[in-house]
Image 1 (cartoon, rainbow, N blue to C red):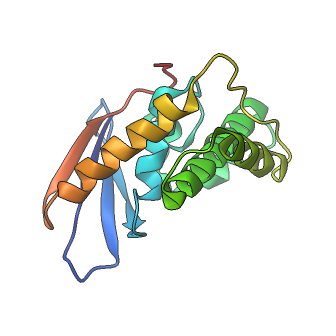
Image 2: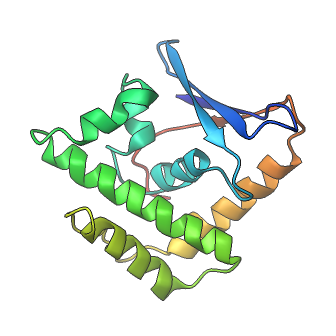
Length: 166
């Protein structure tokens, strides 16, 4: 799948993210401007780096409409989907906190991800043997720099493949 992040007008409060699947079908969602890397682009960092196959972007790539993914992840019959979707969201939230903080604190990141998962009744993602700073934070900073350099009315295209471990 290709992600096409489009910066809209300078006065807009939202940008747009288009999802173009390998079969040519597509959908889109709005990305609120928040002063750092947009939430859905943080999903790109997390879901392309970690072996999660049921995060938000993975489900969109599999054919779900971005607006209806939340319905799918709350389906009690799909326990693995629920667990991985919660873990992906928890990691995204913890990574966003680190981006807002302006520096990476491994302990705080792991605690944030664990608490966000536990708050949703799911186990935390196991980061054993992984370097979250290199896999996630450093890559997020690099993507943030790219995103900040995109002029208004221009776009950034990113290839997405789910469930990889860098």
